[in-house]
Image (cartoon, rainbow, N blue to C red; front, side):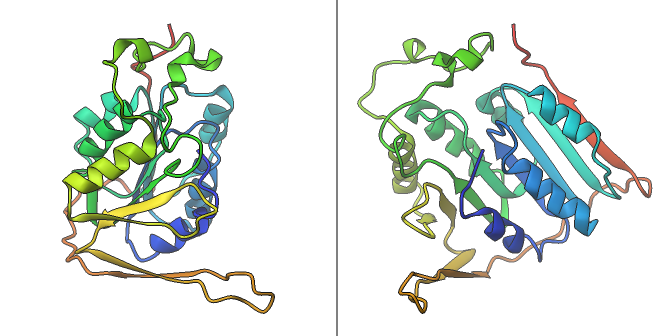
Amino acid sequence: MAYHGYIRFMKHFLQDVENPKILEIGVHSGQTMIPLIQHYTILRRPFKYAGVDVLLRDYLQVILQNLVLFEKQDIEFHQMTSLDYLKDCNEKYDLILLDGDHNYYTVIREMEFIKGLLNTNGVIVCDDYAGKWAERDEFFSELPEYQDVSGMVKKEDIQDSDKHGVKTAIDEFLENNKEWVKTSFDERYEPILLYRNDELTFVIDSTPGPDDTPSREVGWEKKGKVETPEEPDKPKGSTEIVWNTNARST
């Protein structure tokens, strides 16, 4: 999905990671996926991108199939619900983008899985913490575009609760996981950053510029000790695009 005001940060945050791994929950039309992948293909840097969405749009598949990838550049697309993907995921990521179903039921469960999938010094960018879905639920299964998609969370299938919305789920997660904290760059934007506070420190300078408009500069310190895992060698020049479409539309 779109992370307004944050894509530039994502690129800079990962620039000192040797082989960054990115997980995006909720790809939609590729507003974030495409510029991130383009960034790494232009630089010819190794990276891995995994996108998860219940609907793989035809034009995204065409775009990805025509990409020119370089050595150790891997792209995966998993057409399934976020909860189905996360419960069986054994990969760790440096950047996780969370913008799936906008309801408390899904988000609180996503976070319980995701907290174990983040690499040391990694960060989660969670969309819709502010805005209309902060304390209200949205179920994609009720939208016309997703009527034929199976396996999605439906409002009528979950027990009535007085807890609703993305913010409610995230605040509960933070209350129950004291080592995690949140940071927002700008109150005008809906996303927030989530991270373990013993690994990262963010400094946001909002000093007004010449026209009294806040000019926000974001700095960070990565404090966690990173142990580089050994990965099996791939043949030189190998690239990979994987399509996992186990949860196709019915």
